[in-house]
Image (cartoon, rainbow, N blue to C red; front, side):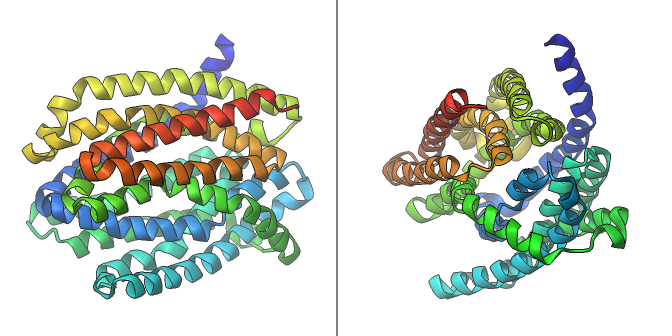
Length: 402
């Protein structure tokens, strides 16, 4: 176990470093953004990004699940990258147009140029996610790391430059966010080459059919942060949404090491036997539990001093939501390995049932807690929801046969 632990950490470290650099840039840029836009503007920015992120989640169609499921079939592997591009741009364009139309229908004032800019990036972001899934299965983490860094530089360096000249506006920040996925897509497609990007229509149909069985549940679960942000703005105020997004953004630091572990272990989960995948998943659960607890403890210890110092005195109000949301960060680190194992076994039903129930629970808790407690109530709701989801998924994993 000790040797396996050291091997995993060594393999994950470059990915942690790349994500760490991007996150560090994001924290510095986020501080500049928070000071320039103030909590109200930060909340509006979060709402726009939430709409675009929702379009990405829907357009992604959970394609990574079918990539994992078909990966053991060596003949099909060669066409997964080509399908990732075609499906990504096609589904991304459709969902971006639908999202803009839905926003305009619900509230014509929301159909702003800033929202249009954010949604224009959706096809590129979906394509990026699809290609990243294939490259992680191939074990090409170095290429993924390079694209991650390119994405971070494209998004955050312009924000810092604009902030230095006091030119940072809501539209400019959204444009920087939208530009982030373009360099990553160009890096991936350039490295793979035209031959590797040839699609296969029959396989694409099979992928869409299988991924669609997972999609509703996975979208429901990954919509939880967006639902929290939007409900905070609707049931309380954009100011509280701004406080919540800062707290959630800081806790995203926990995902740097835990997601790296999940990514480097993915080939071991997707290939080989079911019993081998189970052993890898068990190893990931133990490692992610230790890592996430350590990260959350460090973040919580410094939050009261660090948040007002980095983001400004008004953001002292983000400390309580951060503490309320901290358990959710630990639970999310445990959910990811089981999700990947479920995809390996091509068993969408348990995941869909659990995640749909999680969304319903979260919406109910948000409705009850946000009016009185604001961002802290949203954090409590998210932590309860993630704890229940993790407990159900791990119970399924333990009791299921190989």
